[in-house]
Image 1 (spheres, rainbow, N blue to C red):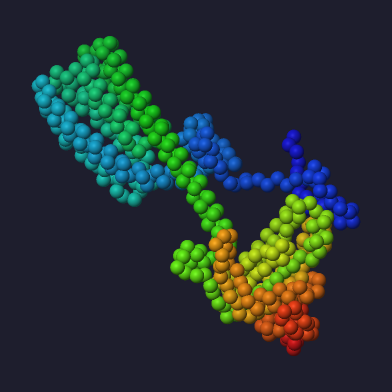
Image 2: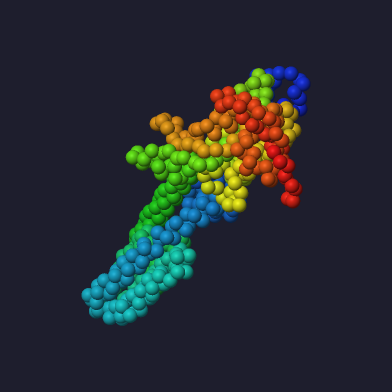
Amino acid sequence: MPERHVSWTAWFKAQGPERGRVPRDEACCPRIVRGWPDRGRFDRRGAELVSATSRGGSAIGSLLSRAGLSFDDQSVERGYTHHSMEQALPILRAGILLATATFALFGLTDLASDVGGVVSTRFRYMVACPIMLCFLAMTYPGPARRHVQALTSAFALVAGGLVAVAVLLLDGETSFKIAQGNATPNFMLATAFLALLPLATLNVLCIGLVFQALHAVVLIRSDAFDFQHVAISLGFVNSTFVIACCATFWRERLMRIAFAEKQVVMRERETTQAQLLSFMSLETISRVTDPSKSVADVFGEVTVLFCDLIGFTQLAERLAPKHLVELLTAIFSRLDELAAEFGVEKVKTIGDAYMAVTGATDHPANRRDRNPAEDMADFALSVQREAAHFSTEFGYPIRFRMGMHTGSLIGGIIGKNKRSYDYWGRTVNVASRLEATAAEGCIQVSEATFYRLHRTYRLEPRGEINLKGIGATQAYTLIERLEPGTVPADG
């Protein structure tokens, strides 16, 4: 039985804060095992993109997967099929044209035979070549793009049948001797053509076996049947068939390897882009890549919030570093989700403090009939309510104190290494000082923010407070959002 792991938060909750200091010995604490259940990986040994959840399939599907001719992940297999169909049509058209030209040239050689293969030549030019050109015309309509393999397989089978008919006609009207091996070059060339067509390995194997059967029937129907010549002819055609199968197998396998590697590169690129966009906007990234432009912006009115975790020092003394980081990750990840919900932009985390702004960037969650201060107020109230859930989940009292201020702001990127978009200005300083002087579990706002919220929120005046480096400032405590129709109290 595999070892069962539980989260450290559940263990900590079971112990309770009154049990004393959490042991720092890793052997005493349960571990968190983080898996990637939906994340694919590229198996270099099998040269295929393997999904963590394998699919059940038939014996043929399992064999193809083991041979590297099928992806376990159905979505990846569909992507490869779509990708190969787009590349297969030009190859199929070129193959049909080449096969038609080859049939026409063989018609000339039929005329140069001993008696003159008039009937077989007429068959090649009046029947075989038009049929092949009809297949060429069938590759241009839209539905052909969805059935390339079926169309190519049908063309190959029809071409093989035309070769057999042409050989039999030539043998009937000339001194062309099938049993002496004169039909072998026709079937060898037809079999070799299978490797040039955009066919899957399994299709080439099946069609090639049909060609071998046609070749054997043609040889057996010959009047001058000679076992030794028949064996030699079959050996040549079978050798060509094996070479065609091997060539098709390695071609498809290499194509799948290239496609899988491309998918891995695309996934990594998307992951990198997503991580990069979490630090700065796409517009900012484009400006950063241009060395002639400086990234500096001025915002007329934004609302800045600082959120601080109360009792972080005592919590750090009780938890091992690894567990402390996991706790902060769980808390700040939830704050990130709330920020995305209310259209709030997370700027950064400073230790156990969380900095966010509204009004600096466009966000789909922002409505035009609201001001940025209201979005930040809703976010702050949600964080305050979420503190109770954190306390229940972790078994430790989690509380926040927050400070909000509305005003102008400067944003930009400075430095060369570890660059990120940051904000500066008096608005940031006032919000930080309001957070530092706020009561535990309260949301303290400035007078500028109060005038933008007092019509839709209930705020209580706290009086004039002295902020370090700022001076005397009128402060208010944000309590809750007012119900529709409620008359706001004068501040």
